[in-house]
Image (cartoon, rainbow, N blue to C red; front, top):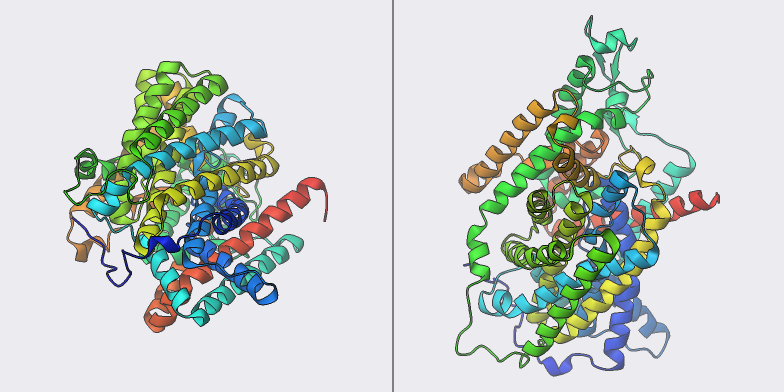
Length: 609
C-alpha cells in the first residue's frame, strides 16, 4: 500500500491555531469569491478541450497575496496557514463545479431533446450533484487518509506549497508575480486575437482527391491543411494546458491528430462517409469531419477508460474493507463529522438528488435512487484511485452508469445522461475534496471546518458557473461541436446516449468498423499501460489522449504538444526554476485567456465592442 512520503510536513500540527468565528468566515468568503471567478475558467476550458484545471495552489497563492496586500495597506491581518487552507478548499470546490454537468451531460441532453434550464434549476442541480461527492468524501477521510495513508499527490503538493510560502515570504511573492504576469500575457494575447480577428496559421500542405472519389465528384479538388486544422493557434491557453499534461500525453495528442485528421479524415471524406466542407482552402472542416471521427474517438476513450477501471478492482474491494486500529479516534474526536451528522448529511443529499432527478428530468424514482446508490460506490472507487495515482477516472465512472441505464431504462436519454451526471460529478467532487482534506491533514486543519468551506464553495460555484453557462452557451445545438466550442466531453456523452437510444443503424457509413478497431486499440493500449514494466510503459501512447485528439481541432492537439515539449525542456534545462514556476506559469496563461475569453464572449453577446 502506498504511503505518504512527505514526512517533513508535520501531521500533528496544533489544531487550536485553526481559525474560528470571523477568521473562518473571511477565509471561506474569500474562497467563494475566488472560486466563483475561477469556475468560469474551468467552464471555458471544459467547453474548449474537455478538461478543467485544479486551482488549489492558484487559489492559495491568490488568497495569500490579496490579504498580504490588505495587511500592508490597512489594519487587516494577513491569512494564517489554516485560513489559506480553508480559502483554497472553498475555491477549489467552487471551480470544480463544471464537472457537475455544465461541460458534458447538461448540454448533451439539450442537444438531444431540446431540454432547457433556468438559472435556479441549474444551481439546484449542480449543487446537489456536487454535495453528494462532498458528503461521501467526508465519510471516506479517516479510512483513506488516516488509516490507509494514501498519498493524494495533489494534496501533498498543495501542503508543501503552503509550508514553503509561510516559511519564506519571498517565495510566495515570486510565485504570485509569475501567476499575475502570465495571466496578463494570456489575457492580452486573447484580446489581440479577438480584436484583430486572427485565425490559426495553417502549416501548409495539401491532400489531393482521388480520381472518381467522392471529393472529386463533388467538385472539391483536394483538402488543404487549413481545412483539416493543421495550424498554429494565435492564443496561448492550449499551450498552457500542454505544459500541465506532460510529454507522454502531449506526444499522444500529436499522434492522435496526425492519425485522425491527417489520415482518417481525408479517407472518410474521399469515401463519401461524410460530406466535405466549403470548397475553400481556408475553410475549417472540423464540424463536417467530426460527424464521422466522433465515433471511433468516443469508442477508444470509453473502451480505454473502462479497461483501466477494471484494473482497479483491488481499490474497489479495499473501499469496503473495514479499516482502523485501536488508536483510531472516535467519530468527531479528530475534528471530523460525528457519525450522526454524517448519516443525516448523507440522507439529505440523497433525497435532494433523487427529488431533482424526478422533478427536473421525469426519471422514475426507483431509477433515480439506484443512480445515487451507484454513485456512492463509484465515487468511493474514484477517490481511492485518485489517492493512489492523482488521476480521477470521472469519464469511466459516468460511462459505467450510462451502460447500466441503457439496460435499466432503454430509450430514455434523460435517465441515461443525468443519472450518469450524478456519478461523474460526485466522483470528481469527492476526489477533489480528498486532496484538500489531505492538505488539511498534513498542516493540522479540522476536517469539519473544511467540510463547511467545501459546501459553501460548491454553492458559490453553482451560482457563478450556472450563470456563466447560460450567458456563454445560449444555443447549445448551434454553438457546440464547432471550431469555436469543440466541447469534446459533450460530444462523447451525447454520442454514447444516442448510441444506446437509437442503435448502430443510426451511425454513418464505416463508423461501426472504425469503432470496433478503435475500441480494440483502446483496450490493448490500456492493458499494456497497466502490465508493461515501468521502463517501457512511459513509451506507450495514452489511448485516452489518442481518442480525444479525434474530437477536437487538430490545432488544439498541436498546441498542447508544443506546450508539453516546452515544459519538458524547461524541466531538463532549469529543473529548479521549473519545479517552482512551470505549474504557476501554465495556470496563469490558462486563467488569463479563460477569463478574458469569458468577458469578450459576454461583450459580443451584449453587442459591446
